[in-house]
Picture 1 (cartoon, each protein chain N blue to C red):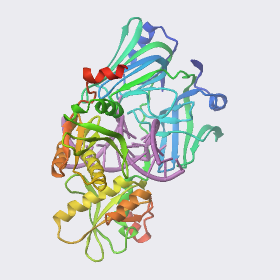
Picture 2: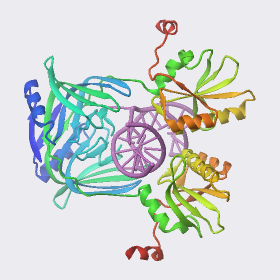
Picture 3: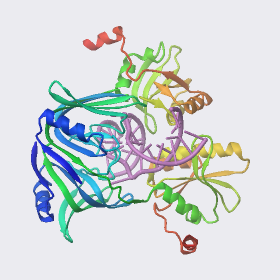
Length: 249
Length: 249
DNA sequence: CCCTTGATGTCGAGA
DNA sequence: TCTCGACGTCAAGGG
């Protein structure tokens, strides 16, 4: 996994190292004093400072400072990645089009540079996404309301898609908007737009239900004011036994 | 800047290394085979695989795979960070409350671990933020429309704040919503809510203007349908000479 | 602490 | 390519 590592390399050695590994499906890690310029959707310039540079085999690049999860500068993917000598310093160029952006990293001093092989994409499971919540509630719509019958999922209406489209025990249409976390007023407005869109399509009464484990106070106020309903549901709803059985076969 | 670095340390050596540096205002970098568990707002589990672990002096932690800017797992800040031996493996615990979350990293094998001092927070300048756009347009509102007089910035109405509140040459109130990039329909709806909020407060006519360098086709359609206006403005508007002069004094 | 908004958001899906 | 919406979004700012 560890391919090669240099400590305090001279610029020429660093350049050779980078050129050898940059396009070799390798992950590069560089710690050193660095200056970064970015130009694209915005423009930024970071004066020389101690930073940590990461270049992944997919061409993505990130420059980390001493705080936070977010890099100081980054490039999500690069169409062109190169290293050159400029005024005695190694300079990395990372460009992409669409959007047209460039990140230029000037390495003033390199304390350590390492080439790694992170080839293995290990199995990764995430539980609690909205998609899973949608699947579970589509199977057990009574967790939202008794007598609910799901007609559709991700139904496209105008702009955006209705998470769950259903009919209640009295035959009214129901638009359900799901949120995996605490719902804010934005979710209520989103639901309101979907309900409006459906009302232009069908003559029958249409209800709107926001289903989430929690809701902010202002959001609940907006919901009440606009005739929309809030139903508390767990982020990971327990599928009932009778609903679970069919999954096994 | 480079404090200490180990290659292929045994679990005991790694544990000693981590314990020595974890709470020493130091940035840690570890490359190795790793297994990650996360539980909090959601739950995730990553089977053993080659990963790159980063721990910053503010307690933030991130685990990177071979692709993308986003870490596979992370913890934005930690209230409690510790390293222990468990079944012959070093295990890192990173906890926080509010939201209650925990990330557990089990180090199956460590190829390289490094302690760095990223102390320097170097000067960083970003140009092209919405805040800067707002400042520039507040000084030169004619870039939006001739005869516009800015009354307020970040005016709070109900929920959220109006970027620019102004009056046009005919005395009508104008709500301006700014976007630094291409505006989507969400921005139009946001503007619509602010306009509605103002209309409940004042009797005079109220206009709504979305000012952005670009707009999506659907968003423009929504704007026209709801009587809102779109004005194209540069993300970094040039301040005119006559407007720039007063800045100097 | 709750809530809202901005972000070089990133990322993936769908038309 | 364009557009939209989720995200364990993160992170800053105001009440």
